[in-house]
Length: 380
Image (cartoon, rainbow, N blue to C red; front, side, top):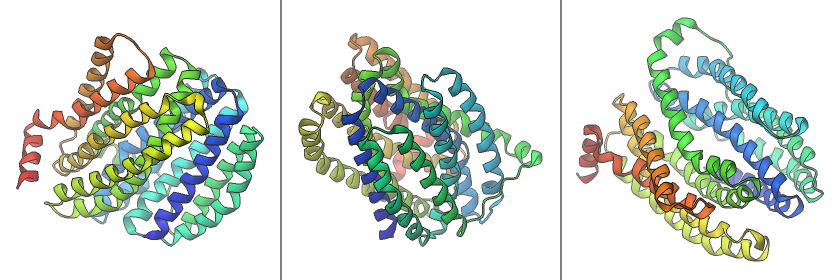
């Protein structure tokens, strides 16, 4: 278990160093453009993965691997289709676009493997991935120091490719498709796709607004805050993934899961504030607005934790529609708060985002009967 945290810590640390050096070395507009289109590919990957992953875990818990194997083909088809759209709207030059695309495409395979590895607790694979990180990291940091974005993206791509090879020793990837399987699962897949699309659109809505309405320079400032928040959520998310299989296996572990993950999140967030403040003040002082934005984003994570555990309760009861409604409520709250504030800037967008998360992740629990049943279970 420790090796999992160490691999994540190493990956995040190197990523943070590269991010920090690039923030110093390249123009804000280019930095903002690069980060935004990377986030768009990540958004597509997350939406696609969310269509299948909760159902994959549910089927794996029933000792069935068919769903896991067949889902990879559909993930690839959906990702390639979305990439065509991104190509036509992206403003990145072709070299950057191609490297970001390939890195995201390989990451889709890698994350698919990781579902199985984490579920089966085959953590020995992380030893090889740590060796790969140790070999590639100095090159990536050096590339960032010289402002070589192309080299940085290429080495990142190679890194993911070799990580896939390491994982392949522990989990076999099957690229296969069954029309009969698609028909049998069409209703569930339609619901989970709609749910994932709305939920993760909501998750990225603040970034879409910043980039579209304020511009790439302002987005680079907002991206510093979101990067810190992603680091926070990565550690919390890893801890969550270790607990979620246990919550799936028993009926009364929801309250314990919420408390454990929330306390972990709060302690980690509080510990991070002095570091984030000092980092921005002394390393990139022109990004001073990022600290306040990060504080707001980190608080929104508590509503996300509650909503995530509540979602397990809903999925086990085949109640997938509430997630769709919750995302709609969250997005509506986000837009309404911005409308009433009147001034659209990064900080106000972060405030609207926090309110949207509170509505979507917590307040909507009391709208549904299943949500009220979940609340009663927590109070037992």
